[in-house]
Image (cartoon, helix red, strand yellow):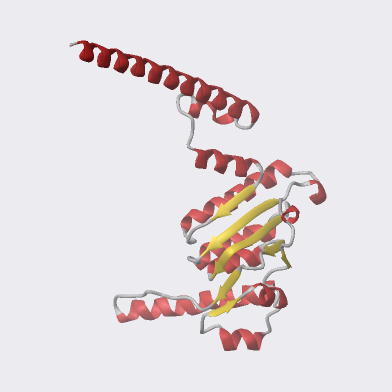
Amino acid sequence: RKESVLIKKRHEKKTKRKKQVYKRIKMMEALMRKAFLEEDFMDVEDLMETTLPPPTLLEYYRRLNDREILWNDLIDDGMIDIPMYIFKWNKEDKGLPVEERKPIKIFINSDGGTANVTLYTANVIALSKTPVITIGMGRAYSSGGLLLMAGHKRYIFDSTSILIHDGSTGAVGDTGKVLDNLEFTKESEAKVRKFILEHTNIPQDLIDRNYRRDWFMFSDEAIKYGVADEIITDLDEII
C-alpha cells in the first residue's frame, strides 16, 4: 500500500510538472506569435489568433515579405500565383524608378510541367518594371528551364543542370480530336522554340538538331548558350 501511495504521488508530481512545462510552452508560443505578427504580418493577425503557424508556413510568408518565391515542384496551374505576386509588387512599386525597386527573386528546382502556364508567367515577367531575378537550383528541366530563361537576370549554381526538349501531348480519343490536339501541340511547340531563341543565344540549327531529344546541359554549357547569365560564386550575389 505504501508503494502504491508513493507511485501515486510521483505520478501526480510528474503530471503537475508536465502541466507547468506545457503552460510555459503555450506562453512562449503566444509571445512568438505576437512578436512575429507585430514585426511582419499585422494584416494576417486575425487568421492566427489561436494557433502558431507551422514553421514552413512562417518561412513561406517571410520569403514573400522579402519578395522571394521558391518553386520546388512540378509546374502546373499553381504557378499562376507567381504572376499574381508580380502584379502585386509592381503595384506597390508604381511610380518608383526601376533602380529603386526591390527585386523579385524566383528560386527554381523543377522537373518541368505545363508549358502554357510557364509562357504566361514569362510574359508577365517580361512586362514587369520591377526587376525579376531567376535562380536555378538543383535542376531546371523542361518548363523549369523556360522559367529560368525568363528572368531579367538569370543565375545558376555550378552544379545546376538544365533540360531542353520537345513537349508531349498525351492525346487519346477519336482520331479527329487526336489530330486537332497534334496541330495545337505543333503550334505550342513553335511558340516554345521561338521563346528559347529569343531568350538565349542558341543557334537555330542547334535547336533544330537537339529539340527532339533530351538535351541536358550543365552550368558551363548553359552560360555558353545564354540560358543563364552567371554562375553563383558568392551567396552575396543573390541574398
